[in-house]
Image (tube, rainbow, N blue to C red; front, side):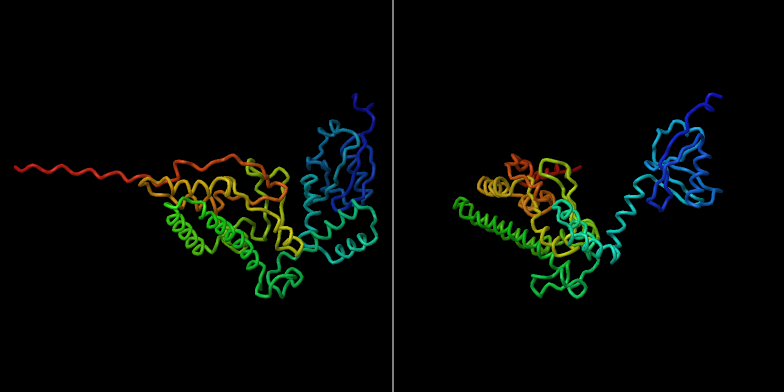
Amino acid sequence: MMSVFRKPKTFKLRALHSQQKFGVAGKSCQEVLRKGCLHFQLPAPGSRLCLYEDGTEVTEGYFWSIPDNSELVLLTKGQTWEGYVSDIGRFLSVFHRPHVGVIQAARQLLSDEQAPLRQKLLADLLHTISENAAAETRAEDPPWFEGLESRFRSKCSYLRFSCESRIRSYLREVSAHTPAVGAGAREEFEQVVDAMGQKLRAEKYNGCYFDRGAEAGSRLCTPEGWFSCQGPFDAASCASRHSINPYGNRESRVLFSTWNLDHVIEKKRTVIPALAAAIEGQDGRQLDWEYFYGLLFTSANLKLVHVACHKKTTHGLSCDPRRVYRPRAEPRKKRAARKGP
């Protein structure tokens, strides 16, 4: 009976597909629901109330425990609400299917805007919604190819070339170390470099890492072309959640060139000197050059990182001494001679 003397609870109420909110007060769930349906001109049968925050349905038993001024969503029969993530989903859908009117409005606002912060926000929005990531060929997206040689006819072909160029440069760095190798081991070092080069050519210099058309296990991006920063060498992931789609537009393609393929175990400071030392100190053992190949040229030791996550400090990591040489083959035991009868 005490509930009769309670003050009405106050809420901010809106319908599912409306941003308009209005204040409403009531002493029961049904009273608030009735007032909401009347205000929005919605049918009362089958309607219900949910919390905007997480989509929890408001019942009479739950009604009085809801804080005053909470935001509610009025749902009619068949409608659902999963909380504010539903709003985020609808907002993000603009970027996947941008309407021409949205782009034009953003451009108009940007042309009239003087405040630097708002200029940046509008420019970033326009940059994102203007992407044409689905297009692949030069004919479909001419602006993307501005400044590139005419031999590149598709986005995938250029991104493959970009990755191949980086891997080729690593091979050149290994080869450039040859004069520093002891005279007695120099020829074998050159042979190892040549073997690595042959393997890389067979693998097409691992250009598949940047190719969104490559198989799932070999590329570093989604089928749409989105790359995510894998974080600094000493972290399991990127705390800033950096991501980029160089297939989207020319600016993203150019910015992607600043992302690094970072060697976790450092290439110049560690891997190449360790390779040379292993060849010089073989002493009859067989070098496992493919171990070094993996460290130099593959994702076994490479992390794709945003420039801000590329730490220039010494990594302080070393090669695994157990992997430098191939295990010695165990001598086969001679079978005991069978005695005669």
